Length: 214
Length: 214
Image (cartoon, rainbow over all chains, first blue to last red; front, side, top):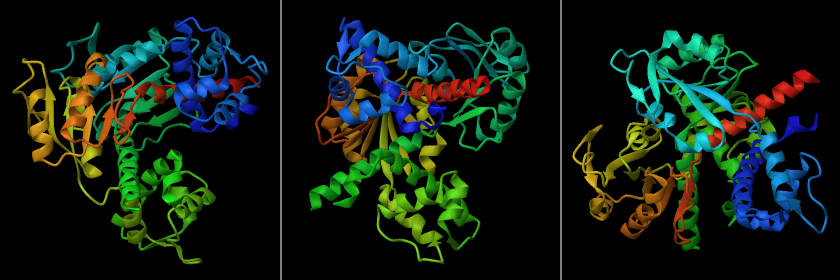
Protein backbone atom coordinates (compact mmCIF):
# COMPACT_ATOMS: atom_id res chain seq x y z
CA UNK A 1 0.00 0.00 0.00
CA UNK A 2 1.28 3.38 -1.03
CA UNK A 3 0.20 5.23 2.11
CA UNK A 4 2.43 3.13 4.33
CA UNK A 5 5.66 4.91 3.42
CA UNK A 6 4.63 8.53 3.96
CA UNK A 7 7.37 10.54 5.73
CA UNK A 8 6.33 12.08 9.01
CA UNK A 9 7.24 15.54 7.68
CA UNK A 10 4.59 15.07 4.97
CA UNK A 11 1.95 14.16 7.54
CA UNK A 12 2.88 17.22 9.59
CA UNK A 13 2.52 19.43 6.50
CA UNK A 14 -0.76 17.75 5.62
CA UNK A 15 -1.99 18.75 9.05
CA UNK A 16 -0.90 22.35 8.29
CA UNK A 17 -2.57 22.30 4.85
CA UNK A 18 -5.85 21.11 6.32
CA UNK A 19 -5.88 23.97 8.86
CA UNK A 20 -5.22 26.44 6.05
CA UNK A 21 -7.98 24.87 3.92
CA UNK A 22 -10.41 25.20 6.83
CA UNK A 23 -9.65 28.93 7.00
CA UNK A 24 -10.01 29.33 3.22
CA UNK A 25 -13.23 27.32 3.22
CA UNK A 26 -14.71 29.52 5.95
CA UNK A 27 -14.03 32.53 3.70
CA UNK A 28 -16.13 30.90 0.98
CA UNK A 29 -13.31 30.18 -1.49
CA UNK A 30 -14.29 27.35 -3.88
CA UNK A 31 -11.08 26.40 -5.74
CA UNK A 32 -7.43 26.87 -4.86
CA UNK A 33 -4.12 26.25 -6.66
CA UNK A 34 -1.08 24.52 -5.21
CA UNK A 35 0.75 27.88 -5.42
CA UNK A 36 -1.93 29.53 -3.28
CA UNK A 37 -1.74 26.75 -0.70
CA UNK A 38 2.06 27.00 -0.81
CA UNK A 39 2.00 30.75 -0.23
CA UNK A 40 -0.57 30.43 2.54
CA UNK A 41 1.48 27.98 4.56
CA UNK A 42 5.02 28.99 3.59
CA UNK A 43 6.34 25.99 1.63
CA UNK A 44 7.17 25.63 -2.10
CA UNK A 45 4.38 24.80 -4.62
CA UNK A 46 6.40 21.75 -5.71
CA UNK A 47 6.37 20.50 -2.12
CA UNK A 48 2.59 20.90 -1.88
CA UNK A 49 2.08 18.96 -5.12
CA UNK A 50 4.51 16.25 -4.02
CA UNK A 51 2.84 15.87 -0.62
CA UNK A 52 -0.66 15.64 -2.07
CA UNK A 53 0.47 13.24 -4.80
CA UNK A 54 1.21 10.64 -2.12
CA UNK A 55 -2.51 10.27 -1.69
CA UNK A 56 -3.60 10.18 -5.32
CA UNK A 57 -4.77 12.80 -7.79
CA UNK A 58 -6.97 15.45 -6.25
CA UNK A 59 -6.60 18.51 -8.48
CA UNK A 60 -7.56 19.39 -12.03
CA UNK A 61 -4.73 20.77 -14.15
CA UNK A 62 -5.20 24.49 -14.80
CA UNK A 63 -8.15 24.71 -12.40
CA UNK A 64 -6.66 23.66 -9.08
CA UNK A 65 -8.27 21.91 -6.18
CA UNK A 66 -11.83 22.06 -4.95
CA UNK A 67 -11.35 23.42 -1.42
CA UNK A 68 -14.11 21.44 0.31
CA UNK A 69 -13.14 18.21 -1.42
CA UNK A 70 -9.42 18.61 -0.66
CA UNK A 71 -10.18 19.52 2.96
CA UNK A 72 -12.41 16.47 3.29
CA UNK A 73 -9.71 14.22 1.79
CA UNK A 74 -6.89 15.58 3.97
CA UNK A 75 -8.97 15.22 7.14
CA UNK A 76 -9.84 11.66 6.11
CA UNK A 77 -6.18 10.82 5.49
CA UNK A 78 -5.29 12.18 8.90
CA UNK A 79 -8.01 10.05 10.46
CA UNK A 80 -9.94 13.17 11.48
CA UNK A 81 -13.24 12.32 9.81
CA UNK A 82 -14.31 10.92 13.17
CA UNK A 83 -14.21 12.08 16.77
CA UNK A 84 -11.36 10.65 18.82
CA UNK A 85 -12.08 10.12 22.49
CA UNK A 86 -9.11 10.45 24.83
CA UNK A 87 -8.29 10.13 28.51
CA UNK A 88 -5.57 12.06 30.34
CA UNK A 89 -3.67 10.41 33.19
CA UNK A 90 -2.03 12.86 35.59
CA UNK A 91 -4.06 15.81 36.86
CA UNK A 92 -1.11 18.11 37.54
CA UNK A 93 -0.58 21.39 35.72
CA UNK A 94 0.19 19.74 32.41
CA UNK A 95 -2.76 17.33 32.57
CA UNK A 96 -5.07 20.17 33.54
CA UNK A 97 -3.75 22.34 30.68
CA UNK A 98 -4.29 19.49 28.21
CA UNK A 99 -7.90 18.99 29.37
CA UNK A 100 -8.70 22.57 28.44
CA UNK A 101 -6.47 22.80 25.34
CA UNK A 102 -8.69 24.36 22.70
CA UNK A 103 -6.60 23.06 19.79
CA UNK A 104 -7.63 19.49 20.61
CA UNK A 105 -11.35 20.11 20.49
CA UNK A 106 -11.06 22.13 17.28
CA UNK A 107 -9.57 19.10 15.53
CA UNK A 108 -12.05 16.54 16.85
CA UNK A 109 -10.10 15.26 19.85
CA UNK A 110 -12.25 15.10 22.98
CA UNK A 111 -10.97 14.43 26.48
CA UNK A 112 -13.60 12.27 28.19
CA UNK A 113 -11.73 11.35 31.37
CA UNK A 114 -8.94 12.55 33.64
CA UNK A 115 -7.27 10.38 36.28
CA UNK A 116 -4.78 10.66 39.08
CA UNK A 117 -3.77 8.54 42.05
CA UNK A 118 -3.28 11.56 44.32
CA UNK A 119 -6.14 11.62 46.83
CA UNK A 120 -5.97 15.42 47.07
CA UNK A 121 -6.72 15.64 43.32
CA UNK A 122 -9.41 12.95 43.02
CA UNK A 123 -12.87 14.53 43.03
CA UNK A 124 -11.64 17.92 41.79
CA UNK A 125 -13.41 19.37 38.73
CA UNK A 126 -11.39 20.22 35.60
CA UNK A 127 -13.54 21.76 32.90
CA UNK A 128 -16.65 19.54 33.10
CA UNK A 129 -14.74 16.44 34.20
CA UNK A 130 -14.22 15.07 37.69
CA UNK A 131 -10.75 13.70 38.44
CA UNK A 132 -11.11 9.95 39.02
CA UNK A 133 -8.74 7.45 40.63
CA UNK A 134 -6.58 5.48 38.17
CA UNK A 135 -8.41 2.26 39.09
CA UNK A 136 -11.35 3.63 37.08
CA UNK A 137 -9.35 3.78 33.82
CA UNK A 138 -10.48 0.37 32.40
CA UNK A 139 -14.15 1.15 33.07
CA UNK A 140 -14.08 4.59 31.43
CA UNK A 141 -12.00 3.44 28.43
CA UNK A 142 -14.51 0.67 27.72
CA UNK A 143 -17.70 2.64 28.39
CA UNK A 144 -16.68 5.71 26.41
CA UNK A 145 -14.90 3.89 23.57
CA UNK A 146 -11.60 5.69 24.20
CA UNK A 147 -8.93 5.31 21.50
CA UNK A 148 -6.10 7.47 22.84
CA UNK A 149 -4.46 7.80 26.24
CA UNK A 150 -2.37 10.82 27.19
CA UNK A 151 0.36 10.20 29.77
CA UNK A 152 0.97 13.38 31.78
CA UNK A 153 2.40 11.74 34.88
CA UNK A 154 5.90 12.10 36.34
CA UNK A 155 8.50 9.94 34.55
CA UNK A 156 8.55 7.22 37.22
CA UNK A 157 4.82 6.55 36.89
CA UNK A 158 4.67 6.66 33.08
CA UNK A 159 5.35 3.01 32.20
CA UNK A 160 2.84 1.68 34.73
CA UNK A 161 0.27 4.19 33.50
CA UNK A 162 0.83 3.25 29.86
CA UNK A 163 0.49 -0.46 30.72
CA UNK A 164 -2.87 0.19 32.40
CA UNK A 165 -4.07 2.21 29.40
CA UNK A 166 -3.02 -0.47 26.90
CA UNK A 167 -4.59 -3.25 28.96
CA UNK A 168 -7.78 -1.20 29.05
CA UNK A 169 -7.83 -1.18 25.24
CA UNK A 170 -6.31 2.15 24.18
CA UNK A 171 -4.63 1.93 20.74
CA UNK A 172 -2.53 5.11 20.80
CA UNK A 173 -0.47 6.79 23.51
CA UNK A 174 0.71 10.39 23.56
CA UNK A 175 3.49 10.49 26.13
CA UNK A 176 4.54 13.76 27.76
CA UNK A 177 6.67 12.09 30.44
CA UNK A 178 10.41 12.35 29.73
CA UNK A 179 10.95 8.60 29.49
CA UNK A 180 10.87 5.88 26.82
CA UNK A 181 7.88 3.53 27.09
CA UNK A 182 8.08 -0.18 26.29
CA UNK A 183 4.75 -1.18 24.75
CA UNK A 184 3.34 -3.88 22.45
CA UNK A 185 4.05 -3.33 18.74
CA UNK A 186 0.42 -2.76 17.80
CA UNK A 187 0.17 0.27 20.08
CA UNK A 188 1.14 3.59 18.48
CA UNK A 189 3.24 5.73 20.79
CA UNK A 190 4.30 9.32 20.30
CA UNK A 191 6.64 11.08 22.68
CA UNK A 192 6.26 14.82 23.03
CA UNK A 193 9.45 16.55 24.07
CA UNK A 194 8.83 20.27 24.28
CA UNK A 195 12.53 21.10 24.46
CA UNK A 196 12.98 19.90 20.86
CA UNK A 197 10.96 22.97 19.81
CA UNK A 198 13.33 25.18 21.78
CA UNK A 199 16.33 23.49 20.21
CA UNK A 200 15.11 24.21 16.68
CA UNK A 201 14.63 27.81 17.82
CA UNK A 202 18.16 28.09 19.25
CA UNK A 203 19.61 26.41 16.16
CA UNK A 204 17.96 29.08 14.01
CA UNK A 205 19.07 31.87 16.36
CA UNK A 206 22.62 30.57 16.14
CA UNK A 207 22.45 30.49 12.32
CA UNK A 208 21.16 34.10 12.32
CA UNK A 209 24.12 35.15 14.45
CA UNK A 210 26.54 33.35 12.10
CA UNK A 211 24.95 35.06 9.10
CA UNK A 212 25.60 38.45 10.67
CA UNK A 213 29.22 37.52 11.27
CA UNK A 214 29.82 36.65 7.59
CA UNK B 1 27.25 28.96 4.30
CA UNK B 2 26.51 25.28 4.34
CA UNK B 3 24.64 25.23 7.65
CA UNK B 4 21.93 27.59 6.40
CA UNK B 5 20.02 24.99 4.40
CA UNK B 6 19.64 22.25 7.00
CA UNK B 7 16.17 20.65 6.91
CA UNK B 8 14.23 20.91 10.14
CA UNK B 9 13.89 17.12 10.28
CA UNK B 10 17.70 16.93 10.46
CA UNK B 11 17.82 19.38 13.35
CA UNK B 12 15.14 17.38 15.17
CA UNK B 13 17.15 14.19 14.68
CA UNK B 14 20.33 15.97 15.79
CA UNK B 15 18.51 16.81 18.99
CA UNK B 16 17.62 13.12 19.39
CA UNK B 17 21.23 12.02 18.63
CA UNK B 18 22.61 14.39 21.26
CA UNK B 19 20.26 12.98 23.93
CA UNK B 20 21.36 9.47 23.02
CA UNK B 21 25.05 10.50 23.11
CA UNK B 22 24.52 11.98 26.58
CA UNK B 23 23.19 8.63 27.79
CA UNK B 24 26.04 6.71 26.15
CA UNK B 25 28.62 9.15 27.53
CA UNK B 26 27.23 8.71 31.05
CA UNK B 27 27.79 4.96 30.68
CA UNK B 28 31.48 5.65 29.95
CA UNK B 29 31.47 4.62 26.26
CA UNK B 30 34.40 6.28 24.40
CA UNK B 31 33.74 5.63 20.68
CA UNK B 32 30.56 4.83 18.77
CA UNK B 33 29.74 3.91 15.16
CA UNK B 34 26.98 5.42 13.06
CA UNK B 35 25.26 2.00 13.12
CA UNK B 36 25.22 2.02 16.92
CA UNK B 37 23.77 5.54 16.98
CA UNK B 38 21.26 4.47 14.34
CA UNK B 39 20.16 1.46 16.35
CA UNK B 40 19.97 3.47 19.56
CA UNK B 41 17.61 6.06 18.12
CA UNK B 42 15.76 4.00 15.52
CA UNK B 43 16.83 5.52 12.19
CA UNK B 44 19.01 4.05 9.40
CA UNK B 45 22.85 4.28 9.64
CA UNK B 46 22.86 6.06 6.25
CA UNK B 47 20.54 8.71 7.69
CA UNK B 48 22.84 9.25 10.68
CA UNK B 49 25.87 9.66 8.42
CA UNK B 50 23.97 12.01 6.10
CA UNK B 51 22.73 14.15 8.98
CA UNK B 52 26.15 14.47 10.57
CA UNK B 53 27.81 15.16 7.20
CA UNK B 54 25.88 18.46 6.99
CA UNK B 55 28.15 19.74 9.70
CA UNK B 56 31.51 18.50 8.46
CA UNK B 57 33.57 15.38 9.07
CA UNK B 58 33.43 14.17 12.65
CA UNK B 59 34.17 10.45 12.50
CA UNK B 60 37.21 8.35 11.62
CA UNK B 61 36.57 5.62 9.06
CA UNK B 62 36.61 2.18 10.67
CA UNK B 63 36.84 3.64 14.18
CA UNK B 64 33.67 5.67 14.49
CA UNK B 65 33.01 8.79 16.46
CA UNK B 66 34.51 9.92 19.72
CA UNK B 67 31.40 10.16 21.91
CA UNK B 68 32.41 13.23 23.95
CA UNK B 69 33.62 15.10 20.88
CA UNK B 70 30.48 14.31 18.84
CA UNK B 71 28.24 15.23 21.77
CA UNK B 72 30.08 18.52 22.20
CA UNK B 73 29.76 19.27 18.47
CA UNK B 74 26.05 18.44 18.26
CA UNK B 75 25.26 20.56 21.33
CA UNK B 76 27.27 23.41 19.82
CA UNK B 77 25.41 23.12 16.51
CA UNK B 78 22.09 23.20 18.35
CA UNK B 79 23.23 26.32 20.21
CA UNK B 80 23.21 24.40 23.51
CA UNK B 81 26.80 25.09 24.55
CA UNK B 82 25.41 27.99 26.57
CA UNK B 83 22.55 28.50 29.00
CA UNK B 84 19.43 30.08 27.49
CA UNK B 85 17.41 32.24 29.81
CA UNK B 86 13.68 32.40 29.15
CA UNK B 87 10.57 34.09 30.46
CA UNK B 88 7.06 32.64 30.38
CA UNK B 89 4.07 34.93 29.88
CA UNK B 90 0.78 33.49 31.11
CA UNK B 91 0.67 31.86 34.54
CA UNK B 92 -2.26 29.54 33.82
CA UNK B 93 -1.98 25.77 33.86
CA UNK B 94 0.17 25.62 30.76
CA UNK B 95 2.55 28.40 31.89
CA UNK B 96 2.85 26.78 35.31
CA UNK B 97 3.55 23.39 33.74
CA UNK B 98 6.24 24.93 31.51
CA UNK B 99 7.96 26.58 34.49
CA UNK B 100 8.44 23.20 36.10
CA UNK B 101 9.09 21.23 32.90
CA UNK B 102 12.17 19.17 33.69
CA UNK B 103 13.08 18.61 30.04
CA UNK B 104 13.92 22.32 29.67
CA UNK B 105 16.38 22.46 32.52
CA UNK B 106 18.07 19.25 31.42
CA UNK B 107 18.92 20.85 28.06
CA UNK B 108 20.17 24.17 29.44
CA UNK B 109 16.95 26.19 29.16
CA UNK B 110 16.21 28.12 32.34
CA UNK B 111 12.98 29.97 33.10
CA UNK B 112 13.96 33.14 34.98
CA UNK B 113 10.62 34.94 35.01
CA UNK B 114 6.87 34.31 34.81
CA UNK B 115 4.31 37.02 34.14
CA UNK B 116 0.58 37.48 34.04
CA UNK B 117 -1.80 40.43 34.05
CA UNK B 118 -4.33 38.66 36.26
CA UNK B 119 -4.19 40.26 39.72
CA UNK B 120 -5.24 36.99 41.38
CA UNK B 121 -2.11 35.34 39.92
CA UNK B 122 0.44 38.09 40.50
CA UNK B 123 2.47 37.41 43.65
CA UNK B 124 1.86 33.66 43.57
CA UNK B 125 4.94 31.43 43.74
CA UNK B 126 5.64 28.92 40.95
CA UNK B 127 8.70 26.81 41.65
CA UNK B 128 11.10 29.46 43.03
CA UNK B 129 9.64 32.29 40.92
CA UNK B 130 7.08 34.90 41.90
CA UNK B 131 4.48 35.74 39.24
CA UNK B 132 5.03 39.36 38.19
CA UNK B 133 2.79 41.78 36.30
CA UNK B 134 3.45 42.00 32.55
CA UNK B 135 4.68 45.60 32.96
CA UNK B 136 7.81 44.12 34.54
CA UNK B 137 8.75 42.17 31.39
CA UNK B 138 11.20 44.77 29.92
CA UNK B 139 13.05 45.12 33.23
CA UNK B 140 13.49 41.37 33.77
CA UNK B 141 14.45 40.68 30.13
CA UNK B 142 17.20 43.30 30.32
CA UNK B 143 18.48 42.51 33.81
CA UNK B 144 18.59 38.75 33.33
CA UNK B 145 19.76 38.76 29.70
CA UNK B 146 16.72 36.79 28.49
CA UNK B 147 16.93 35.42 24.92
CA UNK B 148 13.66 33.53 24.59
CA UNK B 149 10.05 34.38 25.46
CA UNK B 150 7.38 31.72 25.81
CA UNK B 151 3.83 32.83 25.03
CA UNK B 152 1.37 30.77 27.10
CA UNK B 153 -1.50 33.28 27.07
CA UNK B 154 -4.97 32.91 25.56
CA UNK B 155 -5.02 33.49 21.77
CA UNK B 156 -6.41 37.02 22.03
CA UNK B 157 -3.52 38.23 24.20
CA UNK B 158 -0.74 36.51 22.25
CA UNK B 159 0.14 39.21 19.69
CA UNK B 160 0.30 41.97 22.30
CA UNK B 161 2.43 39.74 24.54
CA UNK B 162 4.81 38.89 21.72
CA UNK B 163 5.16 42.59 20.83
CA UNK B 164 6.10 43.42 24.43
CA UNK B 165 8.66 40.58 24.49
CA UNK B 166 10.26 41.63 21.20
CA UNK B 167 10.39 45.28 22.24
CA UNK B 168 12.07 44.17 25.47
CA UNK B 169 14.81 42.52 23.39
CA UNK B 170 13.88 38.84 23.18
CA UNK B 171 15.24 37.19 19.98
CA UNK B 172 13.17 34.01 19.91
CA UNK B 173 9.52 33.30 20.69
CA UNK B 174 7.99 29.91 21.44
CA UNK B 175 4.26 30.36 20.93
CA UNK B 176 1.74 27.99 22.51
CA UNK B 177 -1.27 30.19 21.74
CA UNK B 178 -3.34 28.90 18.80
CA UNK B 179 -2.78 31.99 16.65
CA UNK B 180 -0.29 33.22 14.05
CA UNK B 181 1.99 36.01 15.30
CA UNK B 182 3.16 38.89 13.11
CA UNK B 183 6.68 39.77 14.18
CA UNK B 184 9.80 41.41 12.73
CA UNK B 185 11.85 39.21 10.41
CA UNK B 186 14.85 39.03 12.72
CA UNK B 187 12.80 37.40 15.49
CA UNK B 188 12.62 33.60 15.36
CA UNK B 189 9.14 32.29 16.08
CA UNK B 190 8.10 28.72 16.61
CA UNK B 191 4.48 27.72 17.05
CA UNK B 192 3.75 24.68 19.13
CA UNK B 193 0.52 22.97 18.18
CA UNK B 194 0.05 19.94 20.36
CA UNK B 195 -2.74 18.55 18.19
CA UNK B 196 -0.23 17.93 15.36
CA UNK B 197 1.26 15.18 17.54
CA UNK B 198 -2.18 13.64 17.91
CA UNK B 199 -2.78 13.85 14.18
CA UNK B 200 0.42 11.93 13.40
CA UNK B 201 -0.80 9.36 15.93
CA UNK B 202 -4.25 9.05 14.35
CA UNK B 203 -2.71 8.90 10.87
CA UNK B 204 -0.62 5.93 11.99
CA UNK B 205 -3.60 4.30 13.71
CA UNK B 206 -5.59 4.67 10.51
CA UNK B 207 -2.77 3.09 8.48
CA UNK B 208 -2.63 0.18 10.95
CA UNK B 209 -6.36 -0.35 10.47
CA UNK B 210 -5.97 -0.27 6.68
CA UNK B 211 -3.14 -2.81 6.87
CA UNK B 212 -5.38 -5.20 8.76
CA UNK B 213 -8.08 -4.80 6.11
CA UNK B 214 -5.72 -5.73 3.26
